[in-house]
Image (cartoon, rainbow, N blue to C red):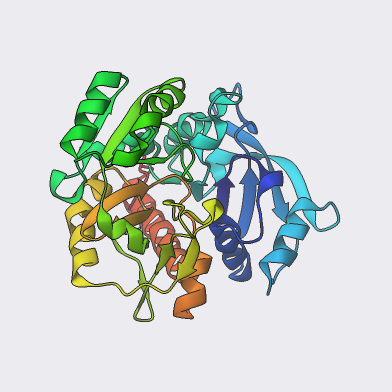
Length: 349
């Protein structure tokens, strides 16, 4: 297979990233991988999508650190202009929230050029048409209400305050745009004196999400991976882990100070996964991370969901193999369909 990985910036990729682990596993299976950043695409006069992309020349890798060194180096990597339309698979693994403000043009680059590549039969994952619906946290509100905390989205100070009062003075406030726990505040009755300042700080950047606070969040959350609409499982193990808070910080995000622990996937988690399954399939979401607290869904990560390495650490199996198995099946089926029925445009199989 020829697989393209679209990321924010190739030079900022790190050894522990899920994208790097997937690419290394693909190379070790004999596939060719190409990396391209948000600004590396083009559309030429022959109506083709092309990209300035980079690949590694090594054939087998044991360590992701070696792989990333080769990718970033000059001796064991190659940079050239490739025709994206000739790829078998294009994986959109950029995080638009990282480009808010100073690189706003980059937020939709993968979606725009991914849609164009689909016309030539490239399998684009996750589906750019689905991703276009998910460019902010409003997408979360389109999932069934029974798995969502009570939520208000507004810029109106009085509405926010009224919602907090309805929640007995305790609620979570965060920006509609953003990720990684940035700008997330837990409002308690004793923090009422600072409420105006918190609201002012959030509304400067746009709409605010006011959300019901779930007491079970004190125990952290569970990241459960979904693939093709079902919980990702390999060799009898679920791709999942638990994120715990550190000290008094309410955020469990790892780069916000959270800690990792093994996760025990229960019927409650599987029920949440089953409830969101139909929409994930409908929107062409191939690989997704669900963040679950108690019996509620706190977030759905459809842009570059990370943590497969963390799941592997606790479950002792390499979940990248399951992802590659699925990708190989998709390409095989696409080839069969083309041989028998001609060229088609599709993002997921």
